[in-house]
Length: 85
Length: 197
Image 1 (cartoon, rainbow over the protein chains, first blue to last red):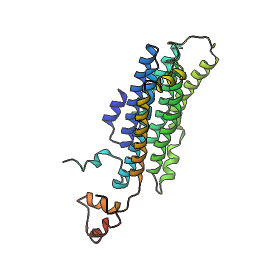
Image 2 (image 1 turned 90 degrees about the vertical axis):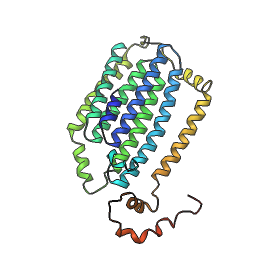
Image 3 (image 1 turned 135 degrees about the horizontal axis):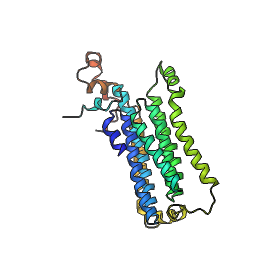
Image 4 (image 1 turned 45 degrees about the vertical axis):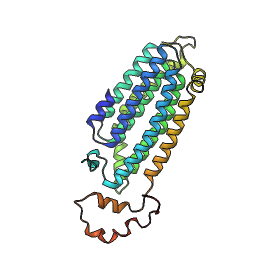
């Protein structure tokens, strides 16, 4: 919930990525809590998948941020709306 | 153990709320690291020690190092040293320091607590997780490895300092003056391999 608020309110790409991390963590917490509730290991396995996905996502995302900063000299996400029709 | 869970959860929520309200990125990163550590404590109290350890190593370690690295790369310049000195003043880290000290006290409490004290839920150790991971979820593990490979290739491709990037900058911003690069239009794609579109 807080991650979603952060995603919607901040216009900085770095903050957007951090909010995505928070949201993925919340999803992982839900999986682990559900797995702990029924005493199964499946929830933790799902958290491992989320973890790997978050790592891949954040590496590509930060590379995009570097690219964006090199192009526009800014990390404001509204500057990158030139693709808009 | 129940009190530990609630205190750690409260710290995680407070840190996340403070994170999205910081103005400077590095301060937000400090709160985010403490938030991840609090979440690791929550995982431990939920009977998932393996996930707690991975949370600390991968999230609070690797991903935060990536964030700090990029944030420092974005601030290359003459004023960067003064800016970083201003970031490191005590007002910035005293808030995350207090919250991290509370977490450390919780850790000490867990360590000195009698070993036989039952948690909230029965613990699911790394062995069960490993058996489940390489048993019914083996296909998922392969998919994750492919995803990580795609991530590596994608990050390398995006981070590569491509030739002709300055020309692409001028080509994308139509309002910018083009007379400067008008002689470069022919040379813009010469060094590109011919088999690429």
